[in-house]
Image 1 (cartoon, rainbow, N blue to C red):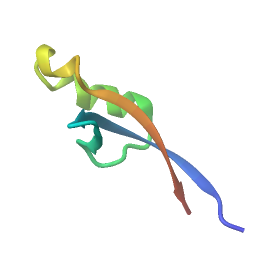
Image 2: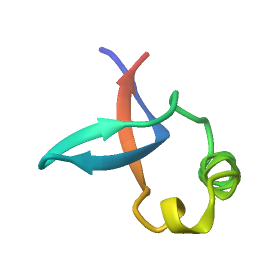
Image 3: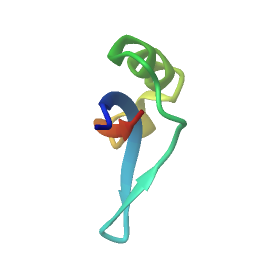
Image 4: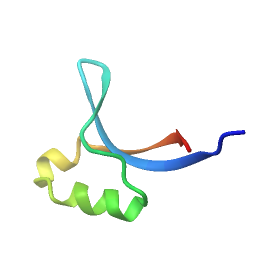
Amino acid sequence: MTKAIEKWLLYTHIAGEFTPLSKPFETKEQAEKARAKYPERKRKTIGLGVILVEK
């Protein structure tokens, strides 16, 4: 039986499609820190999402 692991990801929607902007992060705090590096205007359009990765 496989085990699912949660990973955090930065994403945006371009032309109505989900577009990942980063590699998966282990924790939400790491993803938020990476999101903070973007200028504020761009940061408002970037979301944080969870993906499940099989181990």
